[in-house]
Image (cartoon, rainbow, N blue to C red; front, top):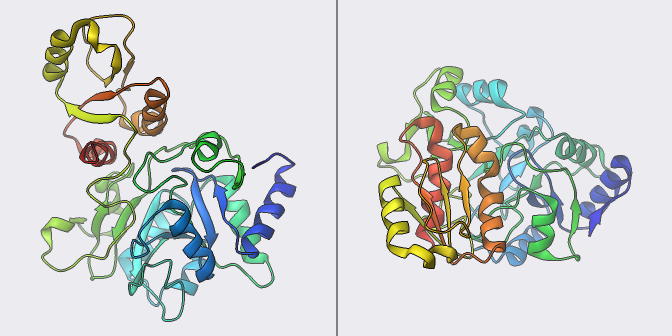
Length: 332
């Protein structure tokens, strides 16, 4: 059920439901989350069962402010604090050493935990009200509000399509960012990028004062993190990543049979039939990220059997979009 009262009444109803151990469809600037009290193990277990997500696959915990980190993390390295100062609230998740006795289920049983302070005004109102509740709800575990491995939701309607009217959903409009947060591991004395997002690695390095390593650069075990499985973010249709030349060659071969193929490309292509779904990918990576998941869902709704996507440019600013597309293609 989508809450449709005033913002204040909707927030209070949402917090009351969370305090009872219920789940909530929560808008953030990245994607909509399936939220529960991070310190309520039964509620967290409900997230896993509702999504069909393995219980050892950790969840990101959302806090109302940087001060909320102290409840969950036993230490915050200096470079991690600099990242917090630069990018919170915002689309950045930090993996930090977890305090004993808190949020074990949300952390997937690991000794580390992923924390984020979202910038969406509705999410911030909910988290602030949770922190002020008696007893306080210190944070909300909130993976994307979709079935495990499928396309993430960026509107309240997408969440309702996934879970029906039984789930309480706060409508915060369309998500401004559109793909999940950047994840940086801060548990090993140096920052390691576990999942790219819309934040530029150059800006991350400048803010924290250290080079951001890739997880491939370290032989040591990296913590499990949300949204880093090889196959993820998949639409119902089979998605293929192709060069512009491969796209054009494939369309030429299919001819009129291309009506069941949807194409999402930056290049101008000659379409064999005007009836086939074609959408021009934006030139700016932030714009592409903003519409990516919504566009994949729209292709599914139009009955596409195949989705052909032009490979994004090999530029760090496109890493987040490329990452989501590669994982979606791996699920096909």
